[in-house]
Length: 168
Image (tube, rainbow, N blue to C red; front, side, top):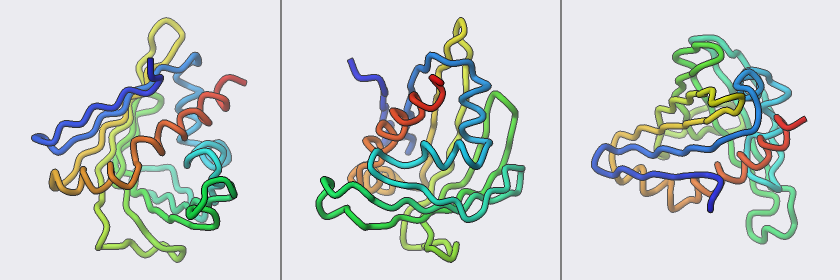
């Protein structure tokens, strides 16, 4: 059974990704709220994350870049992918909402790539935590475009790194 459950709802233009972690939700929260922890797990296996800006407050901005450092990943090796998250709401340690954009290394948002509204919730289940990430899109086509780019697999891979981080 897959550790990460992905549910696509094209009609409502949403993607829901769920994963259970053997850790209290405060640790999962820290993985999002702490710049050093965020850099350790954000991005798929074989990719290194650099954080240029990290203002974890409503109205704040996180500017990050991921670079493939794994030579076994073929054409991805050496590639970079930059993003900006604009934080809308924070309800520590239960949930956060951000707008997530593709960007460049300078932090300029790429208007040609789909943006997503992302709501992350952390639910305590007897000392374990269910992380639920819901992405909302303007169109079903945007949802499909990001799935074709490997977003679900990338998040599952990032969640593997997150699992190791919060296990310690």
